[in-house]
Image 1 (cartoon, rainbow, N blue to C red):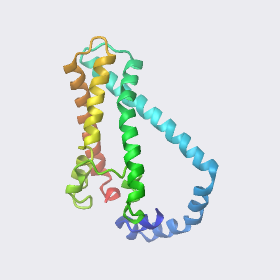
Image 2: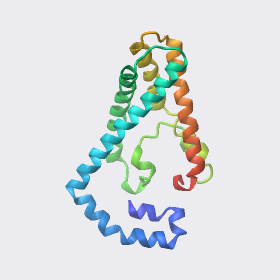
Image 3: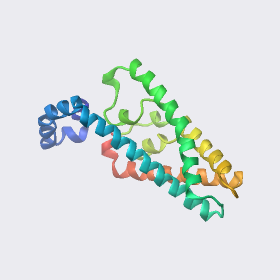
Length: 194
């Protein structure tokens, strides 16, 4: 990962950053072999996902309340987890298969951390030339659409006074908000993506 990171343009132009990355290589290798640090990373990832789902459920809850629906927070949280679980399982299985099929040198050190699956449209543009468009097209994919569909179904079925059209409006509203946030992050951190 350090070798791939050294190939990035913003690292190549910064001698101080390249030197500090090279000096940190032995420590990084030692950390990857330490079982306590790896277990701590797994626990931190689980806690991060838990807080992420809790925050996402709060956003859905606010959208539902703004539209006049009736749900409590735990119902919304269960709908959010209901939507995330199958997508996560599919993503894990496909990533595991691709991990064995892909050449390790072809895996990007930053983009390859989240997923190896190419089910979105960001292959149409170069991240160096158009980081905002690249980021937005990365959220337009099959698994993302499946996630929106599962959110709409979960909200409709878990809510008491939530119609199908309200559930779809909420799910699509959160999805559009997510697209805008991804576009803004692509604008702010374009050099990091490329």
